[in-house]
Image 1 (cartoon, rainbow, N blue to C red):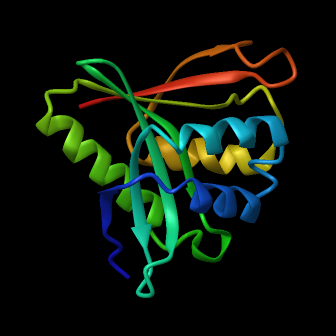
Image 2 (image 1 turned 90 degrees about the vertical axis):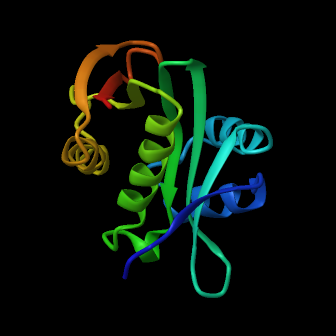
Length: 152
């Protein structure tokens, strides 16, 4: 199916539901609380099903005029592998280019951590054109943070 991603109003309740649907990626209650709080104010992009339910959510930060960051991307487990994430990246990327943004950034769990789910996440971002930039201990030694960027 050709999913459509659009800029939307804030949907913190959908963020909470989506995060709960994939606890192997989003299993830290304090981090999830931060994401839900961020969903109250951050630029919001959604993919909705035919019934209007949010099945994909992206929160975007704009740190500088030339950079946009995918702060959070989450897709309902029942729709993994259907192109929802790709539709979100493409919509945010097109909007960013129209605004003169030159770099799209995302942070994810680094490759030095053995988590297989996040290996899939990194592969998704690489397939979307993101390049690994730097792995740091921003989130602590147990959770290496990988910065990935995509030149636009």
